[in-house]
Length: 340
Ligand code: DAH
Image 1 (cartoon, rainbow, N blue to C red):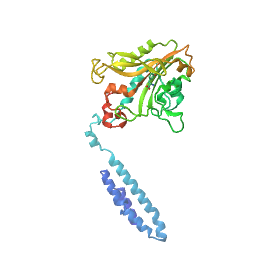
Image 2 (tube, protein in one colour; image 1 turned 135 degrees about the horizontal axis):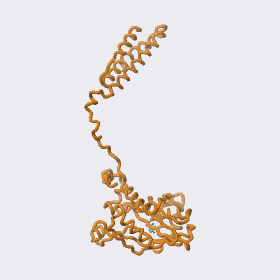
Image 3 (cartoon, protein in one colour; image 1 turned 30 degrees about the vertical axis):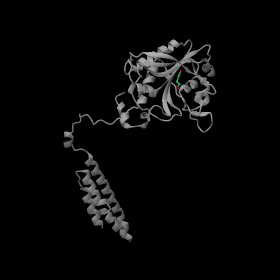
Image 4 (cartoon, rainbow, N blue to C red; image 1 turned 90 degrees about the horizontal axis):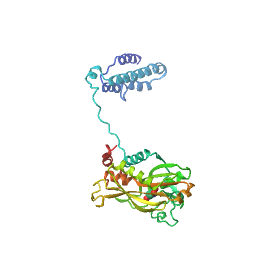
């Protein structure tokens, strides 16, 4: 057996392979289940006494040699030979890698926050699981306000005071209770409402809230900010219009419309032939809200505004069905590849 081992060692040392397949064939020939070296190991098991003692070491050496040699052959076969390299065009552009795309809501949210950051606003965030005080009480909601009803708000079974925030105005409360003016924040985030899911309503959606509190902040400041935002977002031709409205946390309150960006204000089916589309709610922060959060309402005033990101996205990209935003259909998401 020792002679066989020695001649196999020589044979293995002189092995050659021109491809990875050749090398694999050699591995099977020598080391495979029915390979030559494997067979020697099987014979070795039946040996006894001195023969077993003397043959163990050389047999193992043979196996190691074969393993190393064949690995080496495989590795060098993988290297492209110079002749083949000469034919490669290394200046060719590579095949395009499929890149992911940003979600349309992310694109629009980033655009909103970037417009406000140019006005000096910084981003503030708060928890989605909230308590009644931050979402309702501090924001001047009456004890029996319908938004507090189970029909509109998701309560968490842990207790009547734990709920999913219904608007990002709760982040106002969180910032104001810990910060003295001047405050200039923009609060993007997800909100939840107990609504049946349809093309026009969802049980979760996204809002961006803005809040500015300082000395002598006036309604004119609010109007100018809104105008800047609308024209940055929808183009310099955009007109705005404010209609009186009501929110518990602002006084006076207003809703803002912009001239329809599809028909330029002439009237179309999108704006129901009015030439205007509603985009957000706003107003001067109610002094009760400032006082509830520990800010002196005699010294400071402020404005707030809140908008739905889905709504702005629909206006920009005419997405007809709200459910598209959360279905993760690649065909829909890929439409926004070039949007930003
Ligand atoms: N929180 C309101 C909502 O969810 C939106 C809103 C309206 C926010 C007026 C404001 C505001 O800050 O002043 O419908």
